[in-house]
Length: 388
Picture 1 (tube, one colour):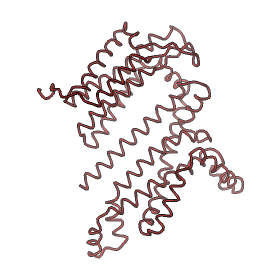
Picture 2 (cartoon, rainbow, N blue to C red):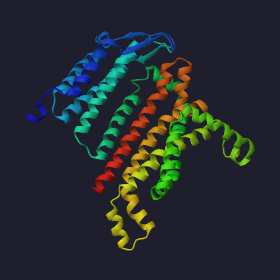
Picture 3 (cartoon, helix red, strand yellow):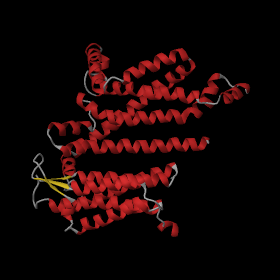
């Protein structure tokens, strides 16, 4: 109990986070009330909403979170306080947006302001810091992610946030949203799966042939320097030519625009991290282990599949993690050439000056990338723990 209440010197990270949160809460709007989708909004600070009990409760809990971030030593208590704060932050947003919506209005829009997003980020960092210091096992980290996703899901299912503009955009595009979500996931995972099939043997071959290694890695590095949109454009010409002259290619969906150039570009971008990590992973295997295996009569293929690849797998998986997160982000750009995905909402929102439509594409993209990174990090740490 004494340990739970013990205080220490002021946490330097906590000072930065608390300063950022206080500055945002004092100077930036918590919500922006708009008469319609594209009208200029009327900003409202959190301090202007304190007549509502839930906003006052949030302010008190934010103060408690700030003190915990600055002074509290017990990470479990700090995590509990920050979790309550992030849940109440979202709940408060729901209540104040409902109160700010004119009765019977279907065109009014309530948008989260800068203070909400900064406070969300600050509390999220306090939670992340506490989770890191608690040294959770890999799968407990995944369980924590599932817990926070479940809390968000419960709040969304309750209908509390339905008056937010992003939820109104979702309601207007619900069927399209899930179609694009499936397209985003399939394009990301599909490109990574194809890249693994191509890059893994290429990485093994590069490890065995040092002279070829430098050429391949330099060539793939050169491809990485090409901006994604430029690469999409470059691929449109050859794929369009193939679609026009090869009926089978056109029959299976190969076209100058759409999913085909997006998939090819994503695969090309994904090759370098997997090839490089495969080479590094194989090079990191202790030569004495191979010598012992060779002394036992194992063939080169048996040493590769039974010793080299299992020992190098965590490093290879690190490359796959980088590629997957990168692909989830790049798919948004593919929407510009008809590749679909969440980028469709982002670019439609930019074209219509509708920030909430932009958020409808951006928020799930960030969630997908973050979740993928946490899950694959847990898998990598779990495998390394087994090998340790």
